[in-house]
Image (cartoon, rainbow, N blue to C red):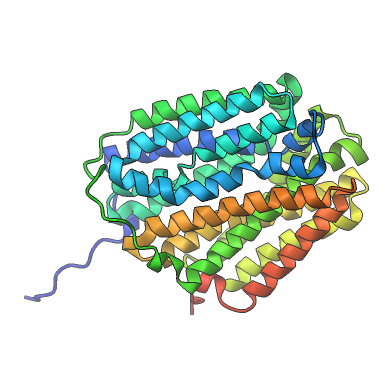
Length: 401
């Protein structure tokens, strides 16, 4: 008889336990609602901020992307705090702060008040802590799959937000959209309270060593997500001015442009997903970045008709949706098992710093009233990304042979 112990079952063969399934569903729902409250403002906030007292182009950009600064600064400290006091209290407090920030912005009639509300929204920085609770509550054999569900849920919330935000704001106003964030936070908190108790919660962990989370291959992915969210946020600072200004489309019809472009972009995103193997191919990532670059180039030089803007958005969403799901998937495969939470914390920090930088870029280059300048800068950022991606394999992962 062989002395060898049986090899562990592959992850795909391990079923989630009822408690794990419930936890993954509830935490994914809470994350989706919170991100829906943030993402749904992107397509409409810049035009609304432009109507407020005291607005300037730079302050408009800060209103759109300002949440990213407090998100980035507080992800790791709040994650460390959750190691001491438990995940659930930090998540609930973060959702409460998000709700307060949403209310502040909803009842403000100046640009300064909206910016303060956006900073408060970002101060509820619980992405890393939510992920850590998911890790605590799931077995290693199904952890990657569970995190994939969470990532897919957040990606779906972005797609829904691109449709829901313009539609809701057109019918009820942007202040009501901020108040929707209060409701989303309350429902998300209820979901978190329904999560089964996790025995690993609370004060027995030692401080996290960040060194395994800042390896060069992981930092490359952090740089990629920084660029992705900088481009995305800057784009949505300028894009509403193209739709409502140059093209003179009523606000009530913007959602039709977004939903049509997202649906059409699946013809690009789905083949990329099918091509991309589990560890990721460098060529697939570069194709997605080329789509971003092409979309920004069309917006910069040919956004003179609804048809060309629609084409640009199809290209942009085709690349963006693949990268938004593909980058964290690569990171989860490359990160050390005992440092995955820390790696995701650094990744989230880079992601939200990118959103903040994108808001500043959008506001700065919108200063002369020309959205094309913003799109041109975004195209340059995509070109820089393409150059970075050409210096090594995608995220440091070897190409399958």
